Length: 470
Image 1 (cartoon, rainbow, N blue to C red):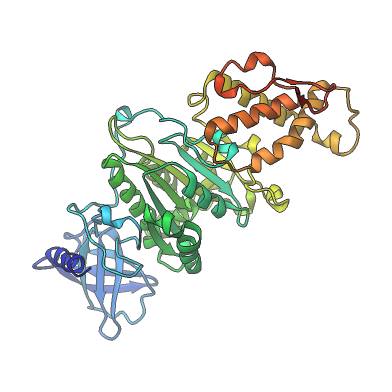
Image 2: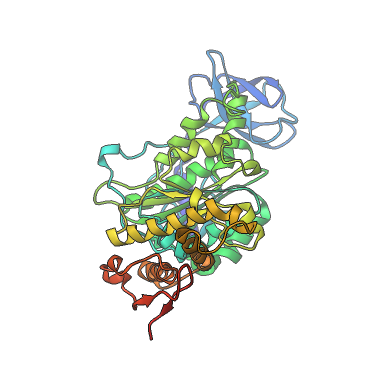
């Protein structure tokens, strides 16, 4: 421990520049501070430190650069700031991830939030970088085992896929994220907690992840009271850490909770910089900001690692057409919709199957598996279409064989949607095939794939549940 602490100290000392340029406070306009003397020494996004005469130092970020001044957005209220207070540039504030970051909880600047020193790697990395070239990227990898029947079959997550979980508050989004983090196959897990409550950070890391889950994870956290620049940086830092491990050839599972708070933090920063909120309350730069972050994840170069990413989307009022949700659906490789009505019935995960899509289908499934998925989705859609008649008692059993099958399938399918499994993808498909056979929807001609083969099943009557041959 002492050697690690000494190495950490030496690394930090070596980063200290021998001289620094400084400027002076010229004016304070609300929450913005204008500074003269640094306009030709800084870049947008650089960190600044203002030394107040009475209070302590105040950090912030370069928001605008003019010919005579720069504008600083401070991390805290600009209290006790005086004219001519000295300001220095801290530069880009890069991070230096390394293997020893696994099992640690960090702030967006790469400083430890848990006890103990944090070793640094050999390279300093800016948190903003370009995604891999489009033509150099691999296609999706194989289907990942998730621990849930529904995600093993009808809504698969493939290696290198980018998935969004869309939900209102209190619908089970965080619980689903936690289960996926513990179950999805990955070498490294990187978790970004953007704008979370302080209590939730500790609860998520200690109670949800646990010691075993944390051992293969890096957690980057910015609480709800953090300034917007820091909340924005939280997602960028987590992405850069994931890219570091991807470039080492690892398969990384990146979870950002939530991308909505990232967009809201960017809105605060952009409006302070002078942008107009013209896009339903968001500035015009928001779609590009979100797309730039999302595109950095996904499949990597041929021969390298991948970043499978899950972005939670907090949907206000369960309106799936609100701006952030609308922006994300077009750039993600799939979206999982959680339904409040299902959650209120104790249905977990509260996945709205018919509204959800995984764009890794049909490529990650065999022909026989795709046939099973298509049949199951068709029956679910048929039941949803006919449910008003069924629930009001206007439908007479036997008048439509397809509706009879959908009713039988719906009864069995609810447990499948909620079910967890440790039997893998093959076990989940076997169970789904069995459900289809029990309601008479799957014929023997569809069992050519050995992984789907089950004991023959015969019907006991039109529209009724089927029983296994003795």
